[in-house]
Image: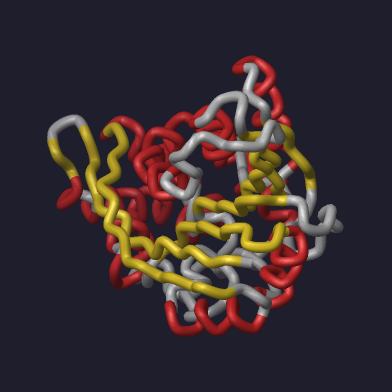
Length: 285
């Protein structure tokens, strides 16, 4: 008899509950793994000196533990003020602490960017690294962000391409599927990791929510994590991680064995290496 798949938690509970705690516990692993992707966002900062004495106002959407927020704040130190917003209270507490220790000009707000009452026309740049795919209503969310943007402000975000184009990200669930037939299937277009994988749909969402000059470019980014962190990574995050606590000891071990073998093609010495297939999306308010 197969164990039932765990119910899908609500997004707010997800990121302040077990999944949020897993991200917090794996903060060092995830920061190192995704740091190369930050370059796609840092390029959106102006390269020329700012003529105004007023610092550039930047919003980091779905900031998590604040790694990208601090990278943006420190890229042009003293000339940028960053605000990170997220629905995970534990991750924001961590982000505030590290910002205080670093002295970066960054603040953090607990809230859902889809509905948060931002000051109108405040931000010069709205950025996100994998933080915008989880909105319950994409058009409402991007319309709310448009109201928070100054005239001619820039939106720059990085989102995942499809599951098929990101085999590393889906290796665990594909390997575990024969043992866990009730594992939730990925559904195209639904809020979640691959919720904005369809470029045409994403363009339509941005157009209908008031953005212009939309540019969507594919970007392949080489990423890596230490081989010794692989088990921690896939056993704490993702659909398989959510199913593991419900399994008998025998089935638990069988799933782990299957998943470990599935990552063999990505091993290179002491590292696990993969290509993150992303969209880099820019637009103007």
